[in-house]
Length: 391
Image (cartoon, rainbow, N blue to C red; front, side, top):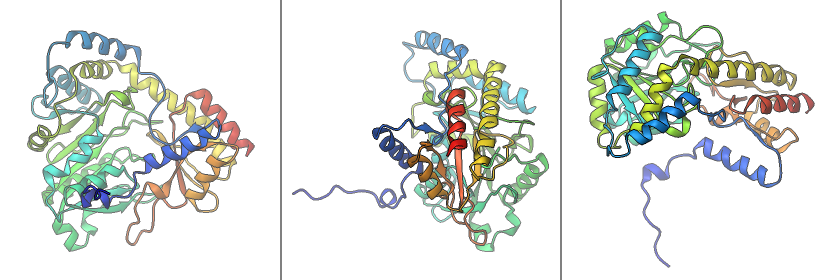
């Protein structure tokens, strides 16, 4: 018998990826014949808008002999991204030096620490939060330090409250604006305060704004509105334009930080396909794309919020984002999620315990909660609401 193949310790020590586990549980239930409605992974089933598909099709023909795309993104897309930032947030950016096209936002989030974090340095991450904030830090040899985000507590970290040893080692701070899954948005004065703290300490401040265009009342501010120096903002076309499968986003902000990120990026990928960037450019220039996505989210939330409350959950309407964040009866999110999937409701939701890390002095921000991604279409959401009312 051959000896086992080697595996890197950094990979072997990783916990399972929560969303992969959810897929396995869902597939097992479907194999049993259940009509499962999936609110697990944030992957909208609504089709990519026609204006985007048309640009993708035209771009595929136009670029069929152009070879590898630019590492940093084609100029037309970066110009469109800069124009979008100016129109949406009132911030002027140089598309040549302050915007970099990315292959979605997940790869950019995961790889970023390799450009800015030396072994042993600290990266401050929200809990609950996107798993690549943590895993990307681990792979770079850094230490991920979680800060708690709850429905009513502080939304952003206070660097003045960090223990001296953590403050001295701090390299990067991650925020999510709006925060997911709580659905809360930081005020501009809060963003300015955190930005000033990071500038004073020479710390890179990063904001994941992939859900910024899905709001229910007032549009969220971007971190860019608080300042550009020492800031990188991560945007995505996945949610606002239903382009999850095309993998397209951009990093915007400080020119020096962008240059460092670009230097790393050239070692990792060969750029986003030009025809995909053509589709993304159309989405950024077409104002109704994001508006339609917002209206769908509002309608879905309007169906599910009362149904969850009837099922015994405590849940508030989000300010923004794709998710509902519910406190469950009984205080055990894992048990509640398993019950919903195994029982007659046959609904996939994500336990909050799987999305958050325990925070010293603040407990477990995900305990006793579940997350629902508003991704099934309106008819399936209506069916899910009926099942919740019935069970």
